[in-house]
Structures are given as C-alpha cells and as structure tokens.
Amino acid sequence: MLDWTFRTIYGTNAVMIDHPSEVLRPASRGALDPDLVSELLMGMRLVGLDYRRIEVSPPFGLAFGEVEGRAQFHFVARGPVHLRTPAGAYHRMNAGDAVLLPRGGGHALVSCPDTKCQDVRSLSAAPLCASVSAISACSDGKECRDDRAIVFSGCMEFDLGGLHPLVALMPETMLVGTLVERYPEILPMLEAMEREAKGARAGFAGILARLADVVAAFIVRAWVECGCGDATGWVAALRDPRLGRVIVALHNAPGHDWTVAELADRMGASRSVFAERFLEVTGMTPVRYLTELRMRLASQWIAKERMPIEAVALKLGYGSQAAFSRAFKRITGHPPGSHAQARQQSHIDTDGGTGLPYT
Image (cartoon, rainbow, N blue to C red):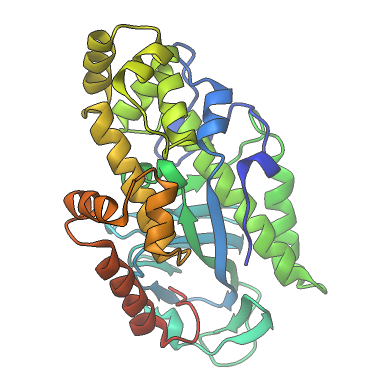
C-alpha cells in the first residue's frame, strides 16, 4: 500500500494541465497562494490498492465497473487507446498519456468506439507483486501482435482529507498531456512509466505503481492550483488572503473550540463583517462549515481508519460521545455506529472480505 503526501513529494511551483478540449492555467490575478495550497493539500493521500499491466491486441474493449469511493488511473504505454468516460464521451489516448478518474465510475478502454466490451475482472491475471498483476488478453488467443496496446491501470483510494468536498466538483476525467513548459519534472516520469511498462524489467511492477501514484497526485494538485474548475466558493475563499487564513486555521485545528469572534480576529475584521463575508463566499455559516468539516473527518476516521467513536468525538472537540452522535446524525442523516457498520458490510459485499475490488 502506497501513501504519498504533498509535503514529501512536491514543491510549490505552478502547474498546467493540458486537456484535449481545455487548457487550464494558473490565474495571474488573484492566483492561489502556493503556501496556502500546500497547507490545504497536506492531508491528501492517493493509495494504490490494485494495479494491473494489461497487454491486449485490437480489436478490444475493456469495461471497468464502478466501486464506491475508488478513483481509477490509466497510463497508456503503447497505444492508441480510446477512453469511454462514465458520461459516454470518448478521448483518444496515445503512448505516454495518463488519466485520473477521481470518482471512478463505469468506463471503458477500447480500440475503437464501436468495439464490444468485456468486464476486465473476467480476464485471467497473474500476480507480479503484492498489489500488481498482469493481464495478457489478445484477441486471437495467441501471442500479442506488434500492434498491441499496453496499459497500466490502477484502482486507488483517493482521500483529500478536509478538502474531500472538492472531489465531487472535479471533472469526471482528468487527462494529463505534456507539462514540460510549466512542470518539466512530469515528462521524465511519464517516459519512465512508458519504458517500465514496455520493458517489464525486474522490479518494474513496484516502480510503475509508485510512479502512477505520483503522476495522479500531480494531476490533482494542478487542478487545485489552476482554479478548481467550478468550485467557485472554494476558489474565492482561497484567493481572499484574509479569509484564506481562516480556512487554513479551521482545517489545521478542526477540534478547537472556535468562536466567531476568534475567527473574525484571524481575518482582521469585525464579527459581522467576517460572518457576512464567510457566508457570501462559502455559502454557509462558519459554524456550519466547521461542523460539516468535522463530520467528513469523522466519517473517514470511523470507516477507513476504524477509530473508536469515543476517540473521534474527543479528537474533534466534543465534550461527550452523545453530543458528537447528535451532530453526526444531524449532518449525515444517520448515527455514527450505523455508518461504520454499513461501510464494513459494503466492503464484505464487494470483495468477499478477502481484498479490495479492482474496477
């Protein structure tokens, strides 16, 4: 299992994502403070759960199902390959192209748009290492031809920590093209992935898995730095230096007993001016924002980290487990105990209790 944080990997340089239909560039006016971005992305994790090197000759169609809470990453080492998105759009991907689907969703990799698809899970996979397997699925049942495609695909646990609401606002597909001009470090990584996937040298599986996590994280950070798409409330908050300090303070210490007066002081404004500005930009009151942030973190700690409910309540500043449970139910619609049970049952239903699903 791989766990990468931005502090470990990244500096604070600006990034550009080159999409087939859209180019995103950091705004020159009111651009996000790189230090603020770094602060907010500190808790981000992209954990590679299950990777596969897929070698297949045309015609082919590989369907990837939807698994709740999982992102999907694809890198094309030899192409072309067409990505059919969950919405039904098609994107041509050539050798060296990568894509992150932050919310996963049912999608397919096909040799041409009208090709029939088979579930990738129905194909035989040979284990290469702990989290990487190999699929050789040539159409004629023999050795793959010279026109074969080679794809490195991964199912990922994508966790943005306190920034998790941004996942719902991300585009369904985030394609990375050449980033040489603004982020020259990305090209050697893509080239290394291409060499490792094609050459299949000793140790290539683990190297590819780590590179895939890093490339996917670059894509996410680029999207945040370039304006977060339609996440206008977040962008406005982060581009307002005074309000940005408040947002960072809330995310850094969600368990603190914040008061409106204390937050207004951080912004350098009166309570009324602060409250009005906060509501205008984020669409909610400071108290509501903090409560929702706490409950998102609580859901993560209870379901994914198996933290006891009493410990979660204490960590988030609640005087009693009962007070925390009331707040949790008010925000999520159900008590924290049933949330943990439902999540556990979901894992049992999807993977039989033996491992994590590959989508």
